[in-house]
Length: 421
Image 1 (cartoon, rainbow, N blue to C red):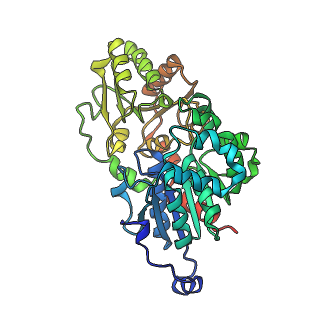
Image 2: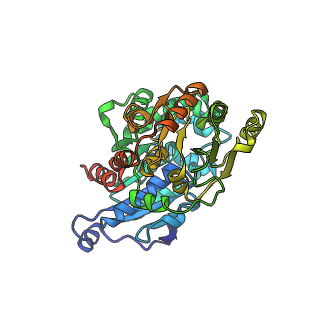
Image 3: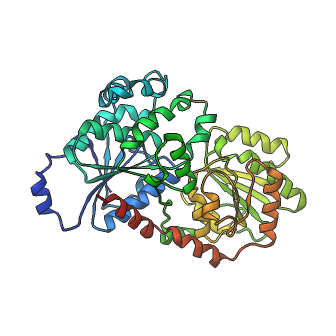
């Protein structure tokens, strides 16, 4: 991994020099993210950056903040570029100047918000990057990055193709978020998202949600599932787990992985675990961190479950836990394409999931690779966990399903879309 600031680049050669010096078919590709903060989106984009570079493309990974647990996982063939942050007001000025007609749609979610997207301050430097480096295509992921990239491309001019990637169903966030700027996001998406050269969503459910929110025809939106680096995941899955409850050959271990936030609904999982433990001995491990940790620990104590619940926090290698667990449970209220389900499949771990919007029913093929239960129903979740503990699917069957999401296959789908004219 080579890291640099956006201002460290030498002047770009002319287009003719660039073409003359590049091998035939080689593209200059950029991936733009707010950061590499822990989560499936960052891991998926790191996988893709390496796959693109392995296919002899020049790859820049552009970050607002050069931070996050996946920095050490970036291929040395990929150049990491840290943008320079600026003030909110300078970013807002650039945003408005990109499209004065969008002033009213920007007013509440950005301009008058006391907590606008942090990416807004990086807009001017992203514009400079696009003008100077002129990548052939820039892929972005997450809603704030998508919006900033489209505004930057409009200001920069040039011929860089912008491919935006929406990772989650936005409707539940817009309806439930305590950040009121989200409540006024739809008009801005309707104004800006149609400018993208390509729109990618990570499941058909997210595609339908984006179409409904923006009015963009469903045919303009392409579904490409998030990738998994099967070889890396399965290699890490063979690592011994540093936890007293593993291997789970004495008592079954139920596993949950994710941020401690309302979306993941670990409260429902803890309640379901209480029902499971009333029927048979078992243990629950929840990996991850978040603002609800204290609330979840208090719930476990109230239900007299603390002795059989472990919350070790964020771990670098969740795959070893998946390989050693008796069942993996996704209890989310909503998702986009939950990478943890694909990773659990790759590790051969039996699965139970809520049938939340969106992704689980597509990944698990309507329950063929793990039962799907209603969101928020701890009784149904407990019954499904007990069923899987008694009659788990075979590891090879689960791993075979995971091959459909292998990073090489997914990267080729992206490259085909990113190279379209």
